[in-house]
Length: 133
Image 1: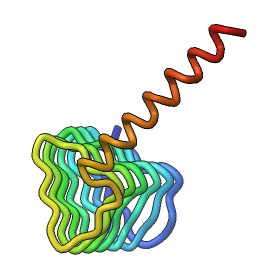
Image 2 (image 1 turned 45 degrees about the horizontal axis):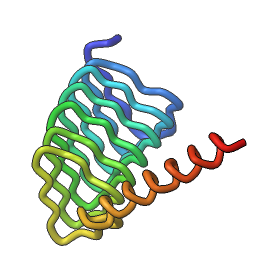
Image 3 (image 1 turned 180 degrees about the vertical axis):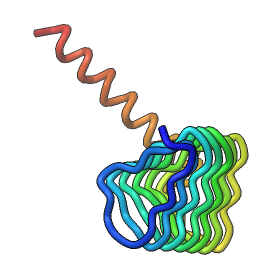
Image 4 (image 1 turned 180 degrees about the horizontal axis):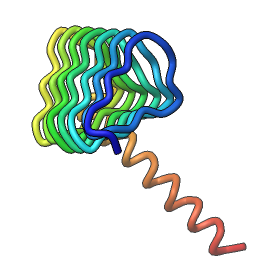
């Protein structure tokens, strides 16, 4: 992998480097062993070994080993060591510390537990049905 990649304006199917900076750009997937910075940029999938800083952008799914900060952006699914979202949107945030302010959340803690319980119930019922047949 390259040490650092700066991507500006345009669409790039896959961006992969140790550290990635995207400005006014889009990508299907971003893979980074280190930090990622998105400014008015987005990706379908973002995987980072370090931290992620998003300003007016986001990703459908973010898997971050470090800390994730999102301001005026969002993610459908965001998992990180710690998550901070300001003036944004998040579907489901998972982290050791999650701080969401002035933002919209699709699934809060209670809804996430309910969704998990619903999936577990469906799996139990399907397992029972397939054991009979």
